[in-house]
Length: 266
Image (cartoon, rainbow, N blue to C red; front, side, top):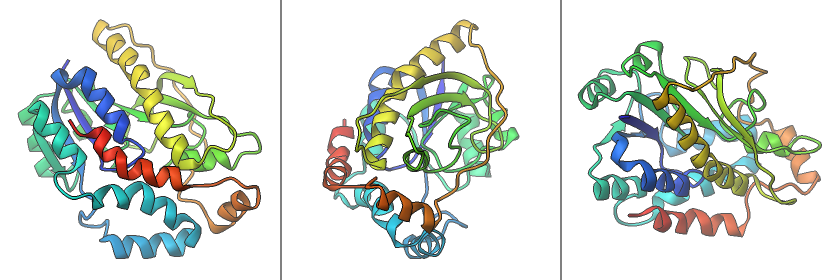
């Protein structure tokens, strides 16, 4: 099976993507890396200001640790090193449905598109470029906690439940049918950042099961009725987390974000 893998440079998925490629690099014919400065996304200052207005200052350390800090390491990035070591074409994704990405997919001829902590929405036309369509790994027990920061929303529950889901990609966020799902127990006091790393890693063997079932033609898809979308959190939710001692990031998360780039290198 030929796979086009789409992801981004970030701490939550660094070790998990490296682990996936250790087992499946021979199948990956294209590695699409999302461009954080693509048109419409804005640069770091504009993005930071947008998050500040939407969620308040409590979210900024989480975003900085998980998405900015890994990019500060000198030398080739984690994904650049992984792609170069395994001879996988690395494609900068400015627009996942734009002409550049469509051309890259047609040249790579994948059987399947895999979204692995990716921040752009595939159109139906783009998904149709792969005969088997697309699948996504999402670190929550869908349909719970659809959206970009599911571990944070899980922590906001009275009794947090964590898990990982592999589901079909459709042109709506985290709304496709479920192919596999697994609850993952995490220790009390886990941060949202540590939970995200652990759940992405837990998703790697689940992905392997789904890929094997798709290749054998035995994959079963369970349709779901999506629950309300969980966006970047409002300030009140973050204040509630802080009041209950539930943290988004700590010193161990900062170290993991910095050294995760080393662990992800070939």
